[in-house]
Image (cartoon, rainbow, N blue to C red; front, side, top):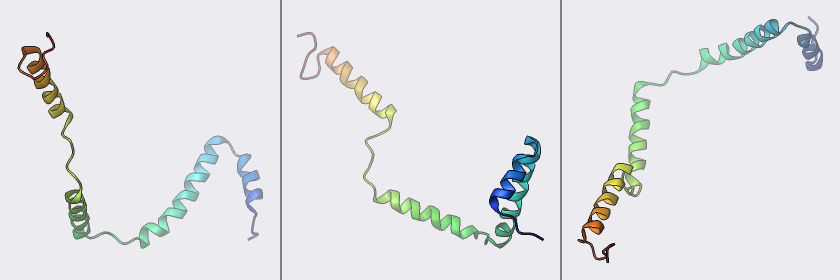
Amino acid sequence: MTIQTLDTVLTAARQLAPRDRARLVARIVEEMVEPTAAVAPQPANNDAWEQMNKIRAEFATLQPVAGSPAEQLERDRRERDEMLMGQAGADVHA
């Protein structure tokens, strides 16, 4: 079999109909993926749990967040109500 250069193969591929070009690409990709899929080790079930535990530990070291948007809205509503009713230090009607 004669070894073709990339330019020669591309020139020949460009002469194909669009559907045949797509089929060519799909077959090349399949051939490239199949050998690695057979060799790739399957992760054990424990690996996923170990990764989850690592992520939980990382989150535990982070600073707490300010709160959810719902909590922030509730705080804003309470402050607004207090201001409007005159119960806060600054009365908006004064």
